Amino acid sequence: MPQLRYFTAGESHGQCLIGVVEGLPAGLKLDRAAINRDLARRQQGYGRGGRMKIEADEAEIVSGVRHDETIGSPVTLMVKNRDFKINELPAVTKPRPGHADLAGVIKYDRQDARDILERSSARETTMRVAIGGVCKLLLAEVGVDIVGHIVSLGTVQAKTDGLTFAQIRERSEASEVRCADPEAGEKMIEAIDAAKGQGDTIGGVFEVIAIGVPIGLGSHVHWDRKLDANLARALMSIQAMKGVEVGLGFEAARRFGSQVHDEILPAQEGVFTRAGNNAGGFEGGMTNGQPVVVRVAMKPLSTLMKPMRSVDIQTGQEVKATVERSDVCATPAAAVIGEAVVAVELAKAFLDKFGGDSVRELKRNVESYREACQRW
Ligand code: EPS
Image 1 (cartoon, rainbow, N blue to C red):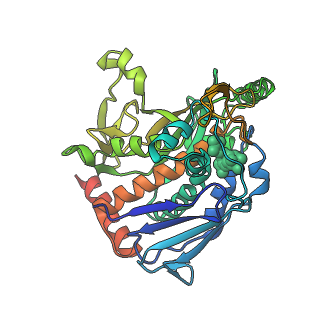
Image 2: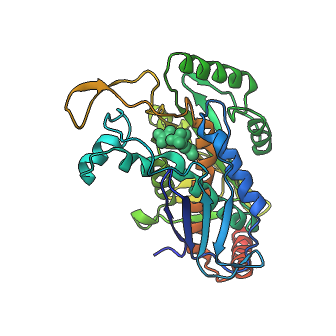
Image 3: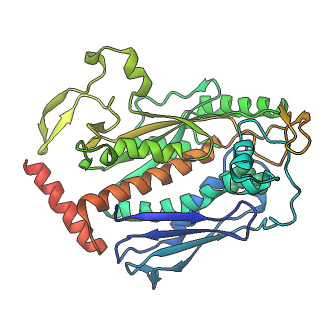
């Protein structure tokens, strides 16, 4: 069992969202402002709908801390829903193609798809971002930093080759669509407007980069210890995700080996260097000391203002699918969720490799390993 585990609970229009994180070392200063900054980042992005104008997500920490520091016990986080009205909402009987509605009502034997959509809603990602925020604070202690940004939206591609981590952060943070290429960003906004004008939705691809990750997180020895696989699973579990690539990803399959693999160069400052990072920071399921680079494809959201054909689950008659308040595009927000999910998986991998009942112990262990890698 990994040292770090978490659960989330809560419905989209329920009272609140809850997260319980077990296995955090003691002595981690929980900077609420940093966690709330990420919650606010998740709420932003061009193409979001009415709900985000109602909510002002803030995490309350209700267990596991004293004087704002973890004490080793489970940390419970809570985000209240301002739009708490789960018992007043109308029934949903016209399942939306692409949504969890239909499979959910059949599987759980419900007559109202609201019983499904309340939990399948991407509102749940609020709590994952809060938990990811906690994990980012832990990762900062061991020298890891993470950024998520949009690399394509619909058919618009961003050009980000040659940009540094800091440039990607600065530029994507300044962009309404979290895109580090301002020209592409404008076209993305146009694409979102066009989709909205048609009563349609639009998806995209985001990339998450993590720097400062040492060699050797994860392992080649067994399938469930391969960190790239665990990352892919965690990223796929974000609502509306349809594909994950590591490094070159699918493009690697179209090239020869000599055009894919990152040549190994003599040591500089004690560590081997690499001629590139097509591997996205992973070889054999282990980190190889290069930045971790993953890209994730998000489908267009399934609530359309111009609804698609469906069948009423009560009458069996052909109808148009349910129309509910929703977003035209939430891919910029998904990049923030991706950062959080990557942070959780990396934090897990650090604690699995280095242990640590306290942050001080974890840091000692990581520092001594980094030194050993330099001497190797
Ligand atoms: C979301 C909250 C939801 C939607 C969206 C994401 O709020 P509501 O359903 O009250 O408008 O805006 O969820 C969906 C797109 C979905 O299909 O459930 C959020 O907090 O991210």
